[in-house]
Amino acid sequence: MSRAACAVIDLHALRHNLQRACAADPEARQFPVIKADAYGHGLLSVAQALTTDADGFAVASLEEAVLLRAAGIGQPIVLLEGFFHADELLEIQQYQLDIVVHHAAQLDALESLARQQAMVKPVNVWLKVDTGMHRLGFAMDAVPTAWARLSACAAVQQPPRLMTHLACADDFHNVSTRQQIEFFNDVLPGVQTERSMANSAGILGWLGSHADIDRPGIMLYGVSPFLNETGADRRLRPVMTLRSELIAVNECQAGDAVGYGGTWVCPEAMSVGVVGIGYGDGYPRHAPAGTPVLVQGVEVPLIGRVSMDMLSVDLRGLPAAGVGDAVVLWGEGLPAETVAHAAGTLAYELFCSVTARVPRQYV
Image (tube, rainbow, N blue to C red; front, side):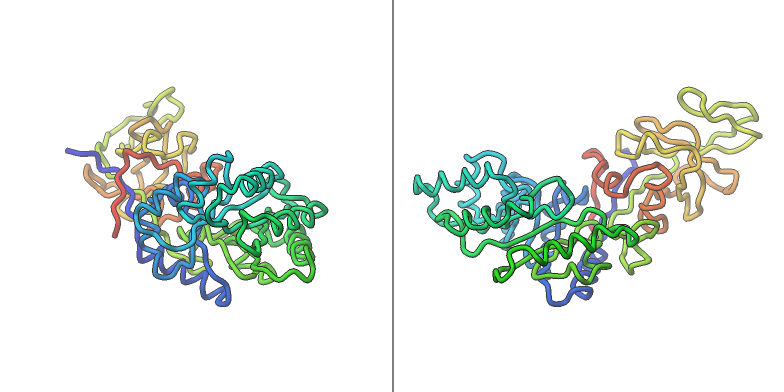
């Protein structure tokens, strides 16, 4: 019999969440961010589910984009980190991909190929502006020169686009987001081209970041992009529900230690449930005792250390629990944000950590 651990992916919820982005910024084109295997939800299945409503897609690497093209995805696909080596450019042109240019070395490579007449057809370029995140992008004072070089480059489809990324938009009390918006709106005054600024937080909470193209990411998967919220607060629906079942129910005595290292000791005679899932499946090993788990829809606390294939739960609040009972680790009925907060991480990491041995079931 196969293990019970599985990740149920609700494609209807996924489409609903994209519609929330469309409703929040109806004038913009939506480029869903589906990098990292669509945040662990399945690159191809997610892209195919969104093709009707998505204007394009955003990924992190050439390999991801090629998989999409091979599956028949015809919308524009933008490589959010551009190209890593000049020899990727011919394949980028072949697959008609958009690239983000964020560094002078990329400008050099485009100009070199233009001189060699190696580019049969120019590529769409998004010039990235560093408005304050200080990760990727041209500094504000370097943008005019970068723009002029791209505008003069025969390898570039004219005109290039402009984009930036918001660093702290999850926090409404952080003034840097408003500063980033102002900086981006002031860059290259008078230049007419498409612009992109809004991520999930920008789409839902910062109207000033709305521009021609949005890049919804975490909101697509049902998670609020804001601090101290869950997706339900923004009328988002959970897309991934990580499920398993009880594979044992043990009657333990006061003083019995549970799990590796004996870090959790039963305070009284009690039932302890063993769930068939662990860090080998992507559940966070560092999740502490007390992290919530749903057993038959009832919240019970995690106890002991998470092991590779199993974890244990306190069943004192659920005396009728038995082997085979359904368990939800996060998703429907238990927000991923709640589990992530308990484990000291982010819902992003929970989703991306679900391993390949956990089957995805699409509904």
